[in-house]
Image (tube, rainbow, N blue to C red; front, side):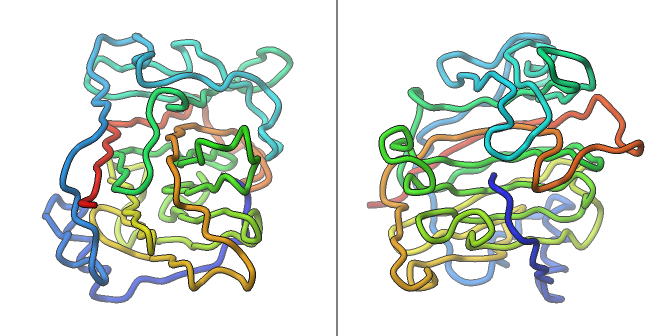
Length: 281
């Protein structure tokens, strides 16, 4: 979830109609642009069942705790407190950004990941999420290469399945970071919802990833695809090893700017499920 320029991408009329159907509950996978990977087996899932206030399953998730800004000048202190990350008792996980003084920061939130618990190379990674809204709110669902401690970022690779500026509630962004195409030079772009906003209801965010391409989807509609031949000259495709999952809600940061007087708190990202599928070798 590293910052990058925001380059507009409009979906066409056919895609707009297809996505309108998808958001109304119709099965529109057939409307995706171009061929898709077809998942053949569920390999990992979390449906977030459990009583309200319970922490996410420690067999699946661990916490990134602190207020370092994570290299993006974020303003929150990320905690493992139920006030910031817990089940809601209705089959959802909530990550809640709050305005409060805590450990020298003016905001709290949470950032959880599956490092050491689950990693996978290739396949379909998806989550059904209802997003928060407001200036300076930055939620994300993303993947990071499991070798990051050994090789560093961006050589480990990063796949942003969904990141979002709370002040632009109809637009999400998907991108790839690797050596020679990271930060402001990341590959990818935004998707604009033709009807409604991402904070108004749940939407399914996914990538389908094989050896020759990564495809981004919203509600089953493929809106962009990146292949190795799109890399800058001399750059290396590093999406050939296992990645782990990260979910977080940042407050402020270089990508979104700080909250302002219009931003209300608390702000909640609600996750219905996270599911991962393998693909036929």
